Length: 337
Ligand code: PEP
Ligand code: MN
Image 1 (spheres, rainbow, N blue to C red):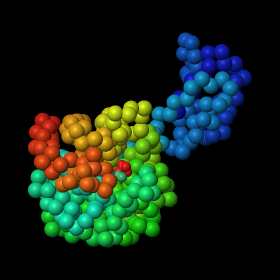
Image 2: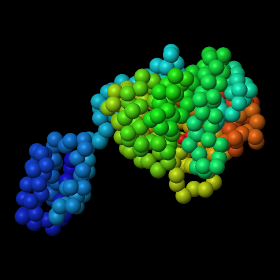
Image 3: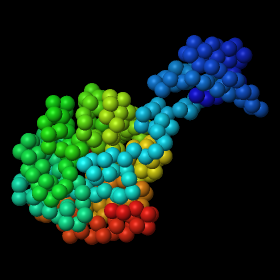
């Protein structure tokens, strides 16, 4: 931690600040510059609240040098984590594609979409059976029936299943059907839930919260890792900003930032990030170019009739085109799709 002192700090204030830092458990090193004094405080604990120092008289600014997350950080583990889900590797050279409807709606719908996902090279079938809807009057998902249908459809086409878990009580049930447990944006900071997911033997895909900083997102990953589950996949799905022409603002830069700060794979969901189907393919291309380890998109055979998120769902032929384009972009950066 670096503590910059105010220009007019008094000798007495400096002594007080140093005394507090030592009390907090730091080794303190003082450097006197031409204009200002800087204190280096070594031995920071990851959970130290730097505001304790910011509020001291004579302190101008405090900077943390170490990140507050440990297990998720690149400093802790240099090599990329590759999450191996029954042989499908997320975080390796291949950019994995996950696709499917927003919600599982019927047997016919999910089987037909699973066929489409597999036919054009997708490896993982997505679809919600328990849906976190903004309105309690909107379709809430088919529940276990939906999970069964999705599992059967995925098995028929040799796909894996990713689906959202919304609460602790659903974990055991969903583990029976899914290969990857999805934590939705609205649940990113539900800490008791994250701790329980940390005990699961299934990989967890953690979406970024609507208003979460990258650091907060990493701290949520830390909860899962610290509880024992090392298979965490991060998913950028757009954040809330002042922009109204898109549903969310796709934070593409989060991809290289996470890759620098963390060894965990990071994937992109351009469907929820943009909210409109005409924006999904351009942003999927951009995400692959930016280094995303997987892409997750919503598709639907009849999006006008979809029970949720129809406007952002690609038609099957658009999905086919997207796959061709993603292959070309991946090849340009030495990866495959
Ligand atoms: C979803 O993937 O269907 C979903 C609800 O996403 P998010 O949590 O990102 O809104
Ligand atoms: Mn959706």
